[in-house]
Length: 260
Image (tube, rainbow, N blue to C red):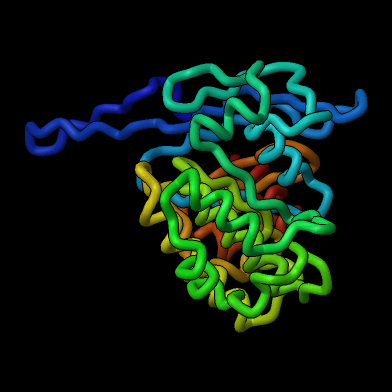
């Protein structure tokens, strides 16, 4: 689903419908410490879209999200990133966050001396959210007076990270592997919070990176893209998920090449 114009017009019964492209990632290649990790990738995120990026471990999915958010040490060597019509390729991470992009990390950092309550209250002071309400949604009220990440279980750490995302009230959240290393109960809680997050964003859109796609039991994608060896090989609808479960990533890519 790689499209070139900013807006695409469909004529249906003489009524024009406009599909808005919120984020355009075009021909993006990225290196870390001089080593090219991802090559010539294209993804366009429309309004009202949930984009799943799937692929085997080490395929470059997390690096792709870090490139979008402008993570330090992630060097764009070609291509560009356009958010809300503005080319942000050369902008620092702080600028991109100020514009409404946010990233939930695959492995959130542990913060010594910083309590959950302090972080949530600081964010909510800026965005007008209620830290207790957010903690209740993620079922982490018992963690509020503990140092962020210290002694948290895998599920608690993921829920704490999603809580920070909710508190930031982003325009377009980028979510890295919300279903990895967590139990079934936590996945359901996390998925419910992500649905709430999406519903409260202005574009009702997100990009979710997932390896296992367990989150798809609760959140259905509108677009599914497969990344292998640093390249997005192809994208399709939600039905592509079932093909991944049946064939695996690499076999699916081989079959797509044969059919192409």
